[in-house]
Image 1 (cartoon, rainbow, N blue to C red):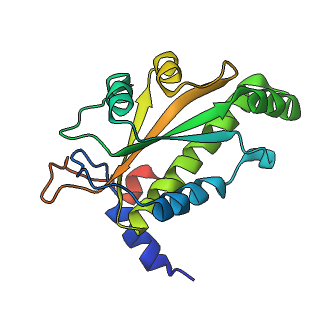
Image 2 (cartoon, rainbow, N blue to C red):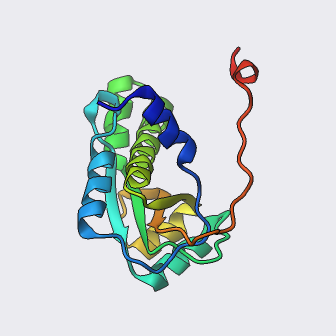
Amino acid sequence: MVALTDFMILLKKRKSCYEFLSTPVSKGDLEKILEAGRWSPSPFNLQPWKFKVIRDSGKIAQLIKASYYGAFHTPPVLVIAVVVDNSVVETLAEVIRDKGLGEQSAFLALGMAAYSMVLEAEQLGISSCFLTPKPDRAKRIVGVQKNVGVPLLVGLGYEVKDAFQKKRFRKPLDEVLL
């Protein structure tokens, strides 16, 4: 069992990486990362996600250009497209009886899956970043069907030693409590 202090160390250690080495992520480590995403919580256990692994450097460059805030010194060696299955969003809307809440719940589940993957990556010594793509462009680049969307990308790889890092801070707890 992981102690809470160990988990807090992991949370505080994880950061967005902006400079990646060209060293590939092993198949075994990638499978562990994808398993972490697969086991994430989801409303009504509908699991609205699909994951598509992109290793092609040309496609990765296109995805970065198609994303907001995609300023990298060197790109990740692989990207996991976190894809939403719109039929599951519709099912959620029927179950919840509110289309907006069905979509909100599905996207919340995608975020949890992505975060589970980056935490597992961090545990394995693999750096990560989140990218928010322009959905229509990302969908074309990733090459997915009409009934899905690509709202989130996770970049993975190994960080360059002494890489650029934005200053990290968090508001004090008393500032975030209502």
